[in-house]
Image 1 (tube, one colour):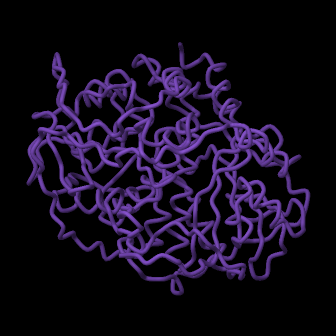
Image 2 (tube, helix red, strand yellow):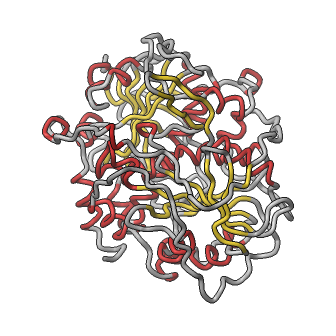
Image 3 (cartoon, helix red, strand yellow):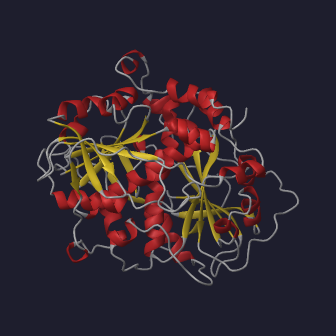
Length: 515
């Protein structure tokens, strides 16, 4: 199955759409006796504790939320304290909540269903306080475990066709998705969630790296069957989905070893039994790159998204001036972040709304966005309660930046319906829908473009989270009725596919006590 055989991807996308009918006829129920373990635990490997005293970035959060590139000259090699801070503020456990019968662990970045299916691995050369090797990060005890000794960065450089950021990175983080951990609740739609959840995590990671002056770049183009064996993954259960280059070395990664032994390391089963959804694995295989030539072809110019001339009224966005922005650091914002489960129906200020939209949509440092600032997703909005802005449906003209009014009116009920008949998007001040022209994306990138469109939406959604919490607002990610979203925003959105949904508003007080 080839990356260019697009029927497989379209089959997955259409088969996993939500509709009014599908959620009433699916018949899926949650088996709490088989709830998956939220951590990957290597039974026989000793932990390498990470330092919990982190360097203070001292950097205002908004300067790094909108940052798309850290420009450096010479060597930038993160030490273990810096790595520990990036890992903690991306995937660490930041709070616990008691419930009858136990505790729920919440992490630095939001995740669908709080199931945390994304794992992080590090491949590094020799660092000041960490030996060269391949490591797994375990947030449960905030430690690393060494899987391989030696410098394997050359494997990743070769797998990415010598992508410059990877080739010169002292550290590369490899993100993987574990099918069953999320499919326990979401079934085959989990494959979309891989990239939403990874993207939300990467929003934190990119922001923290920028705050600590560490260059970082997301790389989605790699030969899958070179990366998965490096991690010794059972690809029926877990697969590599993205790479992040961290730091910069003037010396490129050494050549990869001529051979690599299997590890066969023991891990604790995450459930007594697992239910297989072959459609996810088939889709991952269909979007895999099999050769360096495919990776090279993957790189290049992003499809240009040209919005038609406005047909209705437009409203200039008015972000807050720098002097009025909150001065909290990125660390402070992340530590108070948490998905809002209730919103009041009070309005937010237009300047706040403008600030979070503009700051979150400045672009992402990624190999599939060329030139910098390119995009695969468009943002459509249902505005329920923003001071000085008529309620209605809007399109974000990102480069201007303006909001184009598509239709004016009170659409709280429709927002709730589109968001899978939930109260959150109806109660929120604004519901932000991500839509992509998947036909154009897949024609340019092949099936792999589906991964890119989903993860870009996840990253921007994560940036919206961070901007909202920096402004003392609330935010949450949601799922949706796919085709109904497109229909609601048509004719402007005709031919586009719904990718993601983020709701933003004034949070109501929590009912449960955080401990």
